[in-house]
Length: 253
Image (spheres, rainbow, N blue to C red):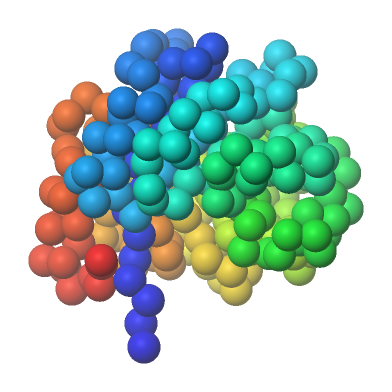
């Protein structure tokens, strides 16, 4: 039986406020994370992703109090990432209400962390977050970045996704930096390559601008579609996206 595809609003949080920019730059305030999370849950969001976008850059932990307040008022699965560096960080986030935890920079720095988290909590808890940029220096043409997209690596994004899934990552959150905030559509080539590389679920992120952009991402191989600015500005609702997906024959909840 086919699994329903998920629609996931994303809350990029800095200093306790939701922010959004273009290509990870020029962040602007979009509102209170708890209020927005409650709003999206009422619209029918399947999950909500909460990313503390400055925690790694500032070398601090994620904002646990905001996560806890969100989890206390929103009863859909909550994925939290940003500043997660250890198994203990994961345990603390799960303790304040996260259902899944996203890891990026720390896993690139020490890949063994993936297996440590999966062994202790199960692969279903671990979402590998990939901030990906096009580059001509790798076989796939894509590299991963660290520290909120600020630091370019020489690591092939597709090979890294394959390795991370083998090490125990339960899901891949694939964010195209090039498409982020542009509203020109998801990077379908990137989604397709990730789908071929790993057998775990793939979440497409970066570039959503209209209801017409979501179904192609699903058809390219995404198991879920994630968006931020189109929801934050009220240009689209979760319901709008689900209606458009149903019209294209995509099974949604």
